[in-house]
Image 1 (spheres, rainbow, N blue to C red):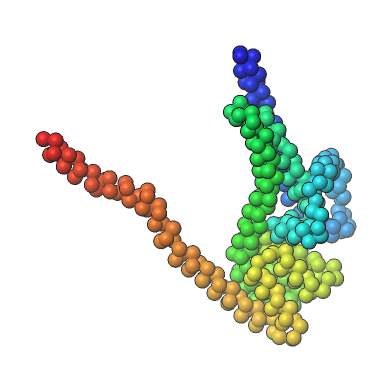
Image 2: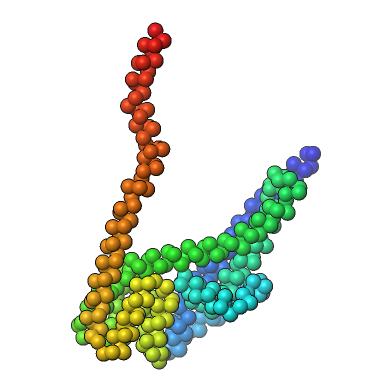
Length: 314
């Protein structure tokens, strides 16, 4: 009995160490994916004179080795249908992961988490707390949870990025209207606005910079704007792209169209804020009723109840 207790006590620190190592490994995967940056910008920087190739060195070699390992793990989880793969790639793009290795890292993280969580469950005190016949079910649940965690994180990143784009869009539109009405062309205005809003609106600045790079590479303006709407996944951006494409096609003033669209975007933003403000009393009803109101009643009616109980006892 003492030997079993001692072995469990010894294996617990090892289980915690392995858990911490796998957590650091998964974080390193996401950080390596995020630090790859914009592929188009990196490709253009490599073509500039005086730039040293960043692929040489120890850290890029380790990164490539790590990506190769994730690629082997991602092979069983790769979607069999083309529409599933394109939908997953679109979701990764809308989350801000435009690298070619984004899908490999995501699918490899899924398989790695699905294999690691059951192993961590076996090394943890879970087997001693669960019945032996329920242990396979617990391990299967841990594997399913590990497989679902990267998808949950990806969905959160998509929602967060869409919300940020919706908040950054009105100010960016105002600057775009000012630039176009000042005499700049649409391509030059997009590039100038992308430079000006790098700090205040970093997400839209990166997307506009990507549009400027595509236009510089020779892609047609309509296709570059449609790619922008596909990468953002926001209704306001999609309507903006549709308006700009139609104005460019039919020869309508782009500055006037942008001003009208900017006013409509700000109106929708104000209506959305008013809707959220109107929901606040209903959301505050239950916390007030179950948490604040009992305390107020205890403070107000407490002395009277004490006096009544004392008088009844006398």
